[in-house]
Length: 549
Image 1: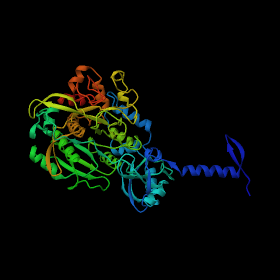
Image 2: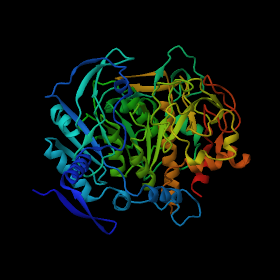
Image 3: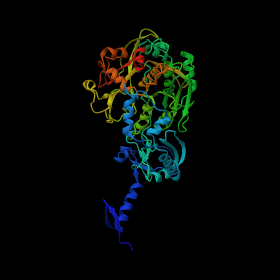
Image 4: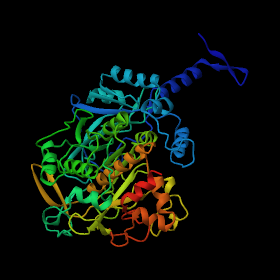
């Protein structure tokens, strides 16, 4: 029987008991086979016992999961992104292809293959892999998911809503040698929702739109924010993130009724089996997003409508396709960990894609609201205004802050991004010098907009849900001009927006409509940046010319 073993420690031979060595090996082997994920998965309602246990989730039920791997060389990636956004840098706007980004910063093929193999070995069915090697989508029985992730899937009573939800009882771990970043689809504690899209049929419109009763149409937004120039989005595509499919007949009805004749191809894409078109669903949000984006850039190649059940599936398909350089999201959700989507947003920035999100329609920030992804520092958050034009279908006349425009200091305490770490910005009244401040920009969002949806058309609709796709269409015009001039698409623009907004007042006012009045509750619109409208709305072709210099 072996009682001791000679091992070398710092060059010297040391006798170690066999029992001690066996204990050491067993401990580290267990640790290697019980690897935690890099982001938090479990809901506070479960860990803090705020949600009452109802029952164990049926082991034969099927879950759809999106397994996410981490990016490599985070420090190198951040330095690369900083250079991409710095004029004068050799890498300024030298964006990467999906293949090149994956080669430089994506998971290795070896690691990706290991995750695919692990999923199959644990009884999970791989339904889709991704060219950037970031996400593996799988279907699996609850019992197999529990075994693979070392959790128990339970049903709980929701602490604030009249429904139950399913979730794991603890943080998942795996026996993979590869560390995972995140697993989407493990709970339905949060049901994503449009950014509080609302209708007020009794609200009196400003009566300056060209639609019924003075309601605003998409063509009015193009005239007010861009003018009558020749840019039309030619060669560009806008992407839309939607949790529910849309009815193509509603989009056709809008342009048939209000014009112009639509020539833009609308491409529905299901990212995980969720129906991308639906004739029986409420498609108010989805239809208006399409109608507003197309109206702003009426000669685009396409509007691609990405539909899915998880943010991971939709966002990763957007970066994997890399066909839409301007992307709008009018939905909000609350991830268990605010870092969840950072790898995908980083890839978007590296590939020259711009992601805009509605800030929300509930006034100034309060705790417990649905503010993600707008509050993420790698996203451009779009607030709302109340627009007045010079007559029906006329040019921009004035704008005030919309009272429901969501803004403030990140309630989830997301760190302040580098573009907000500025001495001049630090002097803005009410902002945080530590946490993310929202929004960045704004556009019309009052209850005076016409939409065709659910088989008919009607007015009185409002929301930052309108503002985000309007900006996405506007930036398609800017991308068109940039590419025509021999440059690249514009990419993540917050560093540029803040440089303009915090620069000389004359240049700022030439590029943005500075909103000077109105309030969202806790915050008021003021000269320069504010926590209701950010830097304001786009001031015609001047901003496009500045962005494409």
